[in-house]
Image 1 (cartoon, rainbow, N blue to C red):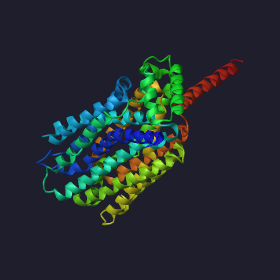
Image 2: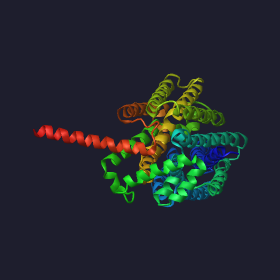
Image 3: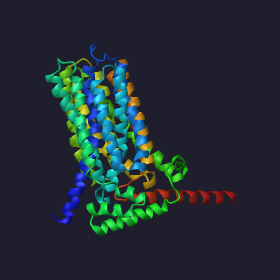
Image 4: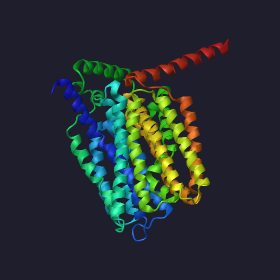
Length: 475
């Protein structure tokens, strides 16, 4: 094996191991989809529509906090160390959920599981972005999104297999949850065999170690050039000794934060996770029996994986902004059609198949365009010393919106029905399209350091323009 091949193989190993965090993220958020109908039975956890929402969304509230603290801890202790810690939490929380005797214990361990999911949602994309060459960063970072949807597909497949073969055993939901313990073990031991992020090492003054890591995944000349570029950026940021809330008062940093929050909220208000968490319930509400809904839901997971492959390919060809706009137009149209046909075809045998076809269409646009761009841009826009904090705060808002949707969706579904619920999401989709068209910049083809320079210069130009206007008014 020549040196170049060895470098590519080692980078591939880093990607495969670290994105097991994304697989766990996907499985743990998707498994509840099929587990809820069995878990809700009177002789199990006896869940109402509200406590169903609480069980599903407690993970999301934990994820919001995990995103904030996960970002800070990854800045302090390193991306690699943080991912290993998250693997331990994933394992403990999975076992706790599997053995939960009542809804209170379940909610507690789902919250703990959420801390790990939120931490992984911040740390893994940051780690991948910092390990990636500029020309491959888009494709490498979105490998994590591929693993998330693969985890959800695996959850849907295992749900269907266990639900149809062991459906008479009401404890089947415990087997569904327990499967997630295995990738948590693989993640922990796998991370023992991969290096720390070179950017993080350099930020801690460990230049020689950072160079040694880069030489394992880059040609030596590229590694040297990247060390110089990172060091230059660190020198530029030397006024920021420690990333903290006070640093977000700097105008150009605040602009990035607000942009990141906007991107995160846009991804969630499409209603994607109402389908990923409650797809089985949606199909049951449309007219499918429980077992048929479990099997039909596999189509949602399958199209998510196929669309993510397409999205990874498109990121190398198309800009982030047009991809996100196209995705939002597609998802909003699908949601509107679900709302319309739920009224027009109510009570007919055709409705469940129409709804399934439209949820598949929705997920093709969501996972093929919106989700890959979201996680990639969030990993790109923050400067190095603020990346953990900025990603943490941004993804906190992502998970809080996700939590609200996860908690209220089953209540809305049982209260106002399928059609009215999806009219609400279609309206939110229109607002999302407006935000992207008005505020989103293009980041394709720029290094992380160049992106930071552009954000700084944008505010400097605005400041000069404002000063010129003040002088003109004074005259």
